[in-house]
Image (cartoon, rainbow, N blue to C red; front, side, top):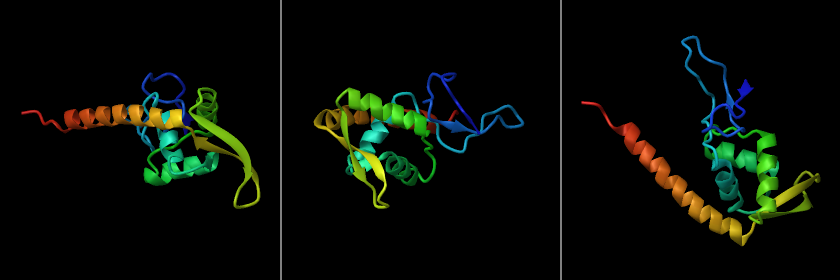
Length: 137
């Protein structure tokens, strides 16, 4: 598998894609993330409570039935960026396996960002679904 890095302006750098198929069309094992959606998805995961990075990835993969594949590097870059912006905060804690991990928790600005950006993303997804459902006569 290769990782799309900046070539597609609509794809997040966290998307894994299989190589081109024999007919030249791109086949993917996971749904490509539109640019800017990773932060919203991470905030949605954190709305359920504090999580460390592996828990966030697992939560997203389970809720999408394996369709969303988040690259670890992209995730930690997003977490660092959101922490700098004050949307989340973190602290070191022990996991259930007694390993030290950084746990991330959403802050009030993160909840507000999730509400506004999440609603905007939902409207956009509905509009795309309506357009794609149209049948030519």
